[in-house]
Image 1 (cartoon, rainbow, N blue to C red):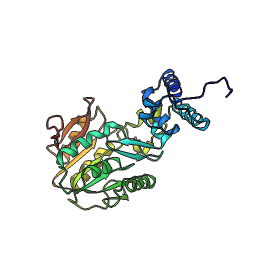
Image 2 (image 1 turned 90 degrees about the vertical axis):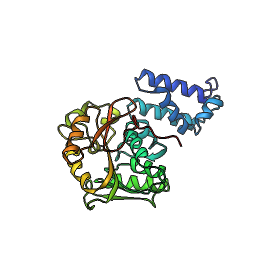
Image 3 (image 1 turned 90 degrees about the horizontal axis):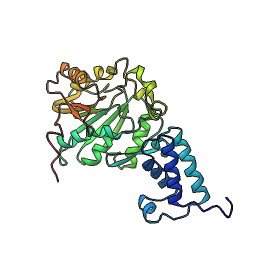
Image 4 (image 1 turned 60 degrees about the vertical axis):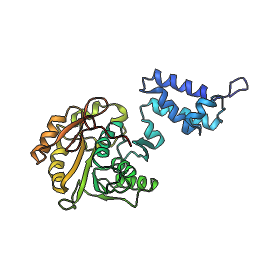
Length: 297
């Protein structure tokens, strides 16, 4: 940088990064540019707004430029930063786990309505990945305890680390196993899962952020995308207590098929719940937040 080159400031690098991301057809260029700047520039959102002319060091500016280059190659922000917010918690994420998505929070909407804050209950998260559903629930429900299962040892390690970081490891345990293998009948008040549900042939056509960076083990739902539900429905029926609640995430076009699989497994009251985008997102026997809104505390 020569003496005539203006020093990089929060606002100048942020605007430049936004323009680059927009030109690169990246979704949410403004938000992505800000999230990366907060880390590279060691600043907060408030700093960017109230102290926009703060000068970045050469090292900070170089680190930010490198992050933007990675994002332009369609690497997700969560992979660049190694963390992702979900519900009200922050989680570490690695290439071994699915990056948590806002769509999955539709499961939490059902759970929060079904289980009031003071209730003690036992839950299990089948295919826990980063532990996002389990840990977000435990963070909101202090009397609850739970276990997360996954067939990936690497995913279990990530989930354990997240539990420890959130001070939830005393109420959360994790086990490497296939779905609910090793658990007995009627052990849980709540069973949740976000299983793989993308048809195998569709994975190659997904956005690069997903196809190239999420583990295919967490995406591939078999030829029709429904294989995991065929396995899960009878297992959930087996381990769920009488009167217990289950909630599983689904693809937007799988509502009827997955509901029918659970109905065939004995859940006559299975229903489809929509997400905030008005798309089918959860099959459950619990309350529907759209018709039974969560009461204000």
